[in-house]
Image 1: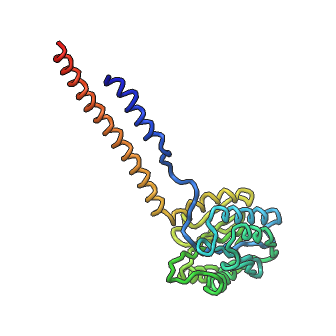
Image 2 (image 1 turned 90 degrees about the horizontal axis):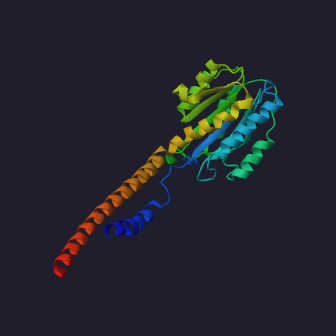
Image 3 (image 1 turned 30 degrees about the horizontal axis):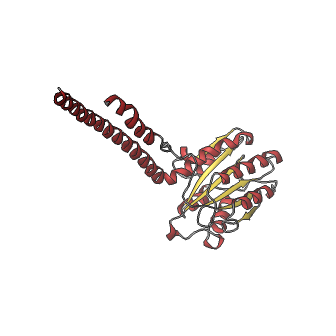
Amino acid sequence: MCRSLNKQNIGYMSSLITAQKPCTTRSNCRNRPIDLVFIIDSSRSVRPAEFEKAKEFLQDMVDSLEIGSDATRVGLVNYASTVQIEFLLKTYFDKLALKQALVRVEPLASGTMTGMAIKSAMEKAFTVGAGARAGSMNIAKVAIIVTDGRPQDQVEEVSAAARASGIEIYAVGVDRADMTSLRLMASQPHDEHVFYVETYGVIEKLTSKFRETLCEEMRSEITQDACICEAQIVFQKKVQLTMQELKHFLCSVLAKIQTLFISVTQ
């Protein structure tokens, strides 16, 4: 009888618990809201096909983020010997429209005035008037610079000023990019803010790296989910243990009843 109870009742109850939705970690990135400005080198050294690859990288980046007026806002600074702000943080709050705007961006050709581009981003793109959120809102300001050459102007002082204003700078070097200049531009620690790829053809491999980096902004939420996941596992184990104890108790009661029944009938 006890064996029957174990296989039928207890087994059925166990199947109900183990049939719950499995406890898994999230694979989709949910970065906290940031004001993100891409600063993209489109000088003559960047061939048309390479510039298209750079734009695909930006589109992949946008795909990995939550875009919206209350989520991440994205602006774009395009530069060569001149600087052109293609769109501001306040321009697009729809992901599809933003990606279409990236497709339409054209290279500017000669020159590599990276310092001028950083200065323009700081003074014109990361302002409240351009769509950046006020400092009191505690929204991170992030600039991602993508370049394949050596700056033709000074970058150290203007980059330091941008960082001092609260802008976190990531520097991505491609092919002939000058690593010393990348380090002068980027925020500390450099091993988390300076990246290098051999060609524009493989720049897309940085997308996952940036996704992980920006997802770290939500580490507390991910940790909370992990705690919930762990709590669910602990709960399941406790229930299963309680069921085993209940089984032993019922078996003991049934055994006593059986013994009593036998003694009465004799």
